[in-house]
Length: 285
Image 1: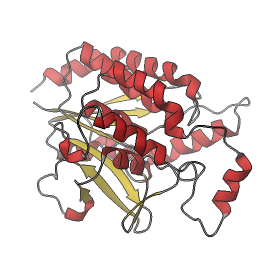
Image 2 (image 1 turned 120 degrees about the vertical axis):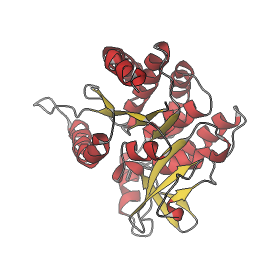
Image 3 (image 1 turned 180 degrees about the horizontal axis):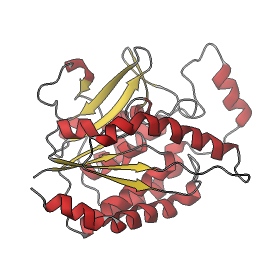
């Protein structure tokens, strides 16, 4: 029986997925197929090319500043970029750093192209120009309806960057005639795409929305808005899951680096708390 794992986006909270993988490995739950959107694509790609959960955690901490772009962010310059009519594809950060970091990490495992990965993997993104979802993968599923939707010739870094190009935060990722943005716009938890790869059972991992109270700030409200939109989008996806792990990270901002360890532990502990149910699914026929 093949087990698939679908990992949602969620900014810095995505490192929680490495904690999920660590808990699954400790309980001998083998993942055969993996997929991830946005931050989930970062963890999924590193795991698929051979990094352990602990290594992913360390690499994430080590490279985080490079991923989001080193140096202090000037809010005024950022706003100027956003409203510049001549630069409609701009965000606060360029996004090239994501590509460079993940290409380098893949190269360390002798992987350059997504087609070099042995474990079946899916990474959703959205082309904002034609309002269409595309899937970066190393295996086009059987009975596909749209061959052009699946892209099998792309560097790991480029695929992760495209799926993680959250509007206004990062520039859109332009490839040929495409302008790719964060895959969470249409497919924040790629449960169905993971199942299309031949998974008999699919475990999906998503984040619960934080509560808003009188002490909430603007960034808390932004994250709440993102969570509300994301949860509406993924309702149909998670219904196709055999089990859903809900992670609650209390008011962690989109790019809040000091919460990396907290998020990792959240993913680990939440999975341990659900492990008996997961084992029932894993060992059922």
